[in-house]
Amino acid sequence: MTRHSLTFQNAPPPDPRLFRRALGQFPTGVTVITTRTPDGQQEGMTANSFSALSLNPPLVLWSIRNQAPSFAAFQEAGVFAINILTQDQAALSHHFATPKINKFEGIAHTQGHGGCPILADTLAQFECDLAQIIPAGDHHIMIGQVHRASFDDSASPLLFSGGRYAIAAALPNVDATRDLTALWEGLG
Image (cartoon, rainbow, N blue to C red; front, side, top):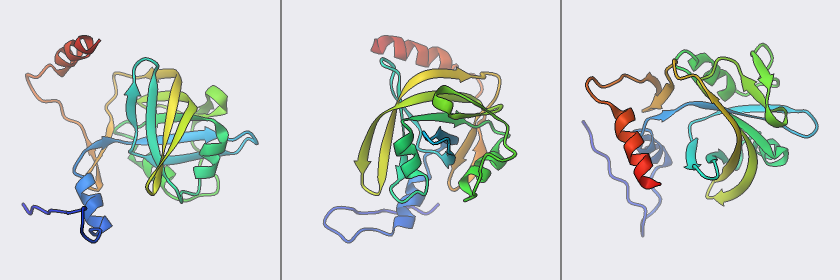
């Protein structure tokens, strides 16, 4: 095991690739964020920056690079959908991470809130109104107020960790559901 250390204050900026590797040590789920602009253009991109923000009101967030080709479309549309991928959908993640003219050609989907594409057979979907955009360095944080959420609790998520796809494995004899439910209820 090799430990790397990066210093950010009062020093030249560290190599961004090392910072990205450090961030990659935190496993995330994999999503495809979709939208439909007022002129009917569908956009989609793979992202792992999705996070819950608030239970009441129901808010979620994700971030997009300032230079992303689809940034203007997400900004203009006013709506987006977050499609959380299952462990069997790595190819779908790769598809939406690759530049293409029509990313939805041949991809099974329906139309959700505001016309946003909802991808078939995903683990969960959050259909959102764009509530706020916050500039943050070389990205923008997109905050969405959830209009509708749906999920399949019989499937398993696709994960991304250390620069590669991964799958989740349950720890034996640990009931996180019970422990987390008690924690959330205590936060009231």
